[in-house]
View 1: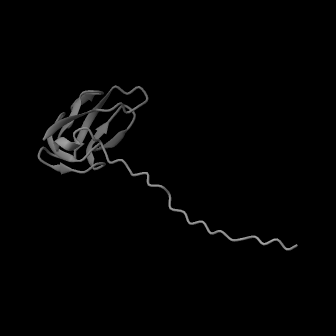
View 2: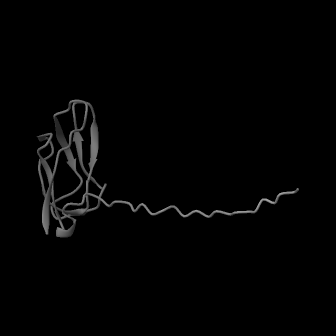
View 3: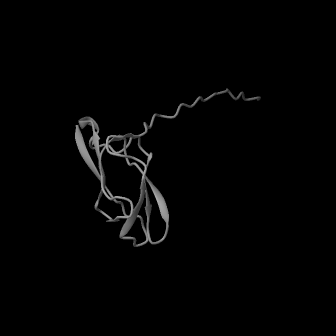
Length: 109
């Protein structure tokens, strides 16, 4: 198993920190990709931050009311070794399946 740290991402518009309002997960919880992890408050708004990947939550950083800076660890996941470098699934680009119907054009001369 491998541990992957998920830092507080840059939430845009010059924001450099966020305050933890509420955690939706606890250490030991198994989470899926895009599952809400935490509710954060910035100087502009409150938002729910989804999980970037599936895995087991090992540690969370920041109790409700604490401020975390962009780039600091927010949550640490435990994932299987063979998925440690994968953040999501990549859709397959199969060749499109097309049916072409040909019909002969007869000269009427």
